[in-house]
Image 1 (tube, helix red, strand yellow):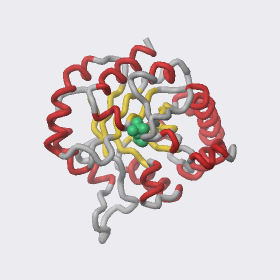
Image 2: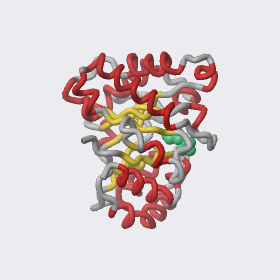
Image 3: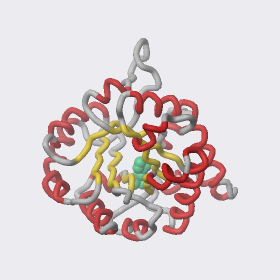
Image 4: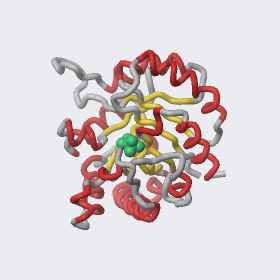
Length: 253
Ligand code: 13P
């Protein structure tokens, strides 16, 4: 069975002090939730505070991005190897990076390779924009993101890949995808992965839903056997994240 995941992408929220305060406030309740992998992704500057606040807990810390470079004259960048000194996960290819920082599938691909090489597990984000959905192009867009972004990964590293399906129009809008839409995209993602890496790897692949996920709607997504948890934005900044984690865990009991 695939162990489900509750992941919180904090985006550009919570500096070191707020990170410590928030995590101390949810730590014990979140630690009690069994049968789910809990992940938090604070801003880079807050990662040490998060690691310290969660020391000895079963809650993992990750970064929201890594550089496609390993070292050198790249002002403002942080390499996967550096991130791996402090934490064990990274998000890669979030739509906000694709949109505002012009990340291409090729960049996503090299970042995934850097991250896997450094020993980080990756939550790779894919998802279509509203115009692409309206043009009935969602499947082709997402399949292309997977094919180009996840090409030629080492077989022994496939277990370190998680895919988050995050339709761009659902992010931060309060307008989540329907369970059926998320499920059919997850099925499509799994079948593209199966073509690339075989049925058994695809069966083991965890696929998360992201986009206005809340404690009120997550149970419906988890009714789908294709969806293995959530990548949560806004609601992960609140104690509601504990509730979301609990609902995800209970859905697989
Ligand atoms: P929201 O949950 O705020 O819509 O954000 C989703 C997201 O982008 C998580 O990566």
